[in-house]
Length: 457
Image 1: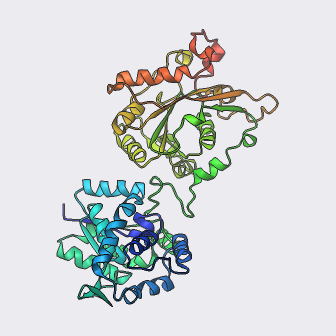
Image 2: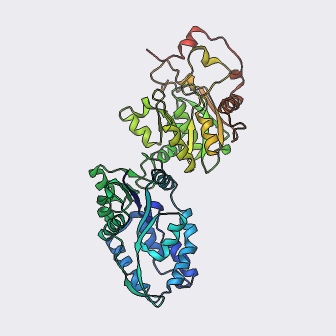
């Protein structure tokens, strides 16, 4: 494979917003800037975070070299070193995963930013990047002289810097990748074979759509749009209210057991097609978007599949096998996401539906063992009364006497065994503990009850 690289912009790409507030604070601490913020500075950074680069803002940025005339290069570098840990901590979770993917593929990772080199180089070093393309201020006698040395690394200047670096490092741009939020980085995106818009400003969003370029948000899983900082599931969570489901009476308990942040696995039993919907309702009570592992029959369906993927579903092909869904789920967990899994895989049929001993597949516990993420067991009961498997639609007209559905959320735990066979038994036992007493005793189902557990023909 030819040598290739991945070029990343900094502000609103690797970072959710501007690096300026962090860097300015460090410059003040090092005595380079005055002790107080520049008037209007907060407003400027806030506007940048909202809409991205503009021609007026970049005209001001271009004058940065003149404003820095007389600054000590050494003090500026110390400010960069001070700011570096905070900047690294601010790198978006899925940006880290993308960098890891490119490293695993043998590509060089390069920062391409307009930000002055001396303040951003320590950040790149701490992130262990392979190259830094940034604006250099000319230095005389240890002080900046108010001019730029070489390219102003923006727009065509950034593209020229990328091209020059690739030539010097024997990198094939046709095999390389670029990530940015700004319409002004179009030249850089055209310079590589694999351009991607990240958290794009409105113009780049439209341009990328016309060019059929991928669009990502590094603070959300791949495929989840977040054009104004809000993803579809967050809207769904806000609408997850009892009045929108009047045909079912849902009781959620144990919400406080779900960690407020960090990668977490919700593992629940499966009794009805309604289960994902009521778990979405529970996610509304929890206040965190949940990424469901979903069968390919759902994610590949027209319209419904697009909606499901926009909500963060992870496609699972039970027949095709492969570990790609588990890898994607592991990435999401490392990025701090909440993953929802039905360990049974599908709704049990026939007598298995009434078996008090639940059986599950290894996926959820393997994820927990691999990533160290805690597992939160969840017991679901009563959804089959609102939507039995032998019906194509739920009983949405049952408003006078809606069936009661309970969602009991247990305490988080880590598997006590690294053997998936033992760990899945432990998990399913914990789920059973959360179910009502009638779920824990063997019953002899009637023919009608058995029929209700099979899909309608």
